[in-house]
Length: 135
Image (cartoon, rainbow, N blue to C red; front, top):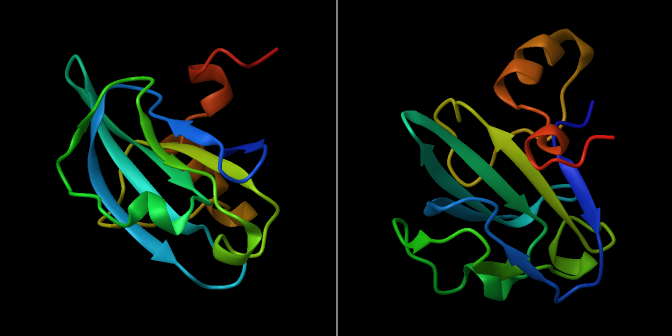
């Protein structure tokens, strides 16, 4: 089961921060079928901390990043990558909201087996609902 939201568009498209936050971690996840370059932002709204993951970016997106850099909602955090650098997928953004990273850095599962689905449904809220995209 897919845990995030995939937004399919052209390589090179700007990716914007969904909420005010700071760069928590980043990594080039180079395995076939993986995210490729990935950025995770940390957010705090009132007293609630959570994370957003942006996968399938360009390598240039993570080339000069610094953990702790603050980004405002709507600010460009990177650009979509080509298939050759993002797990061999057609260009798209994998966007995921995560309540607890469970010690992960630069990566977090984007899919779940049926046996773990209840945990991940709780830990990864549906981004369509949060972003107002649910019908």
